[in-house]
Length: 169
Image 1 (tube, rainbow, N blue to C red):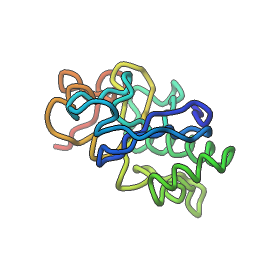
Image 2: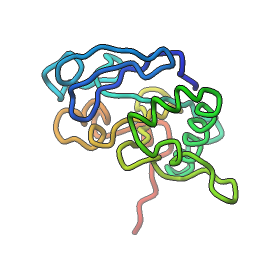
Image 3: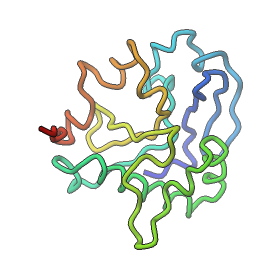
Image 4: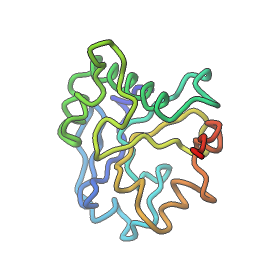
């Protein structure tokens, strides 16, 4: 899903600047955690935890397809969005240096099967089937109540709609 003209709320990992990431740009300064003083209350539907980009996986890619393949498809879609809208790519690069290179296909044409940079990860949205959200890694791995938002009842989207993960024995 291309969201270049649809402002996405961004709260930087330090919690001090909030700005729209869409093509329209702009934004305003707010206090820590985008209007709440409690980082434990981040939520994408409230616009409190950061979602820099969102994709919808094709139905044939779940359930039963690996995280790596999900990330590869998400990176492909984000790369295409960057190609369509260079201004969006520039804004994302300013927020997450290296992201444009991190989603480029390799020499053989395959897209990376990992997060585009160390600063972000693809989050399987638990209540919206097939949706991956590009979120700051620090938020996604934060301890405490935030995990109840990202992974209600200890379960995320990969378990809820993605078919789960195969455990190594």
